[in-house]
Length: 255
Length: 294
Image (cartoon, rainbow over all chains, first blue to last red):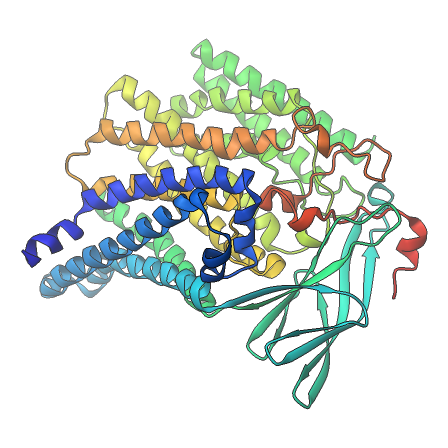
């Protein structure tokens, strides 16, 4: 019975069905996300918080998406363990370089599991907060206080870009207990402090004679490293694996 | 002649040359068709390079815009086929290059001005890799369709789909870095990111058909063709439509500039709409711009 279940779980046909269903689910979800602003709130709230306060009947696609991802996780894990077990048994029959080449797809699949796991970790155990930043006003999160001391907007000088903003920078005063420090922050240049990242952004539409209001997004991202390492290793292995395996299949010839 | 005018003239001449390439392909003069494709590619490259200075400063913003860059990528793939000794296949790509070029010429596409959210290496790199991947997917669909008609064992469509998937994955990594730096999130719960994930899953599924024995060459070609049609609709048609002032009158200014120019930023290419509708650079009061120190 367990063997039968394992075989079904590790089947490639199940992988194909799950990927097709995930594709459909994501397309449907993209239209919900486009037309219903409530799903945009997932970008500023953690999933459990959003689930308790904002989910309704229209959120069905998120539940099916998480369900399909969980199944794909299990399917990938089962498939990969099967293949690693099979390859390990035959390791004496291959040269070390060929063995590593054959093992590469399994490592790629583990990277995929890291990526999914990292996203789950961030969505369920991280923290996200968006704070309006006004010069001189203090904002707090956890036991930490942030005050924007000043802000500065740079505009392009070229005539074709007249009035277009080039960069926006600010100086923040960061307080943690008795420790006080001042740090610069800019758009696309986040600040790392006390395990958090602080990102400067724009909070709203400016009027004709008004400067754009600013906001600070405070983020704790426990899955970040898993996702970035998983993605990078996955891409590097793909770049190496596919040309190599093609070369071997063509009998050592490039064409 | 300004840089913008020179760039436009070169682009128009390149479009004409690509059309000539298609014409000679229809006459089955494949060699001449390839020559014209190469000439069009050289002119198109010059147009894209000059576009870097269209704002009066060096900027890669807009250079990799899908509407402008996709025909270049398709022509590049055609020349790559030619280099690998596939003259007829290379010439047949003019069926993709010429229409893509003419769509760009016919529709009033607005290129976003450089802003604070695009001043990073990851922004142009993301668009470059993504459009190149889309070109691979479309070319894969094209050769899959030819494969279904010819019934031979040519694997070209499969190789293009694999390279498209690798480039698309790289684009997602670079895009995630950009998204994290700018918007504090590797994945954004929005239309654009969800559709990118859907396309990735679709091609991931295609790659896994290699391990299912019931999938013969024809079934794989059908999958590649269907996927390319999905990419054509989602990653090209809808993205180009988002930049059309005809379909987006709300994006035509009036929000303070009084110049009637469309305000579509590169950020909107990724996140469709800025959080709470912020428009970088919308403040055009010169006094405020000069005295913007608090």
